[in-house]
Image (cartoon, helix red, strand yellow):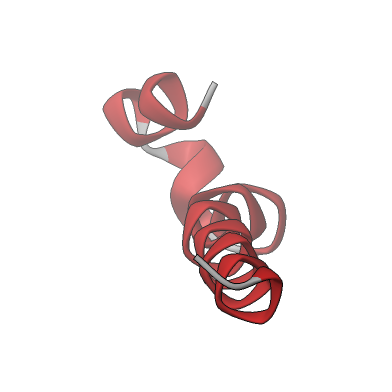
Length: 40
């Protein structure tokens, strides 16, 4: 696997995995018990 392909995969993984964290910080997810538990 080329280094550029590996960087793209890692970049997209970080973006996808950060969505719940951003939602927890900036959205109403903190008010929903099960959603907050999942993010934590």
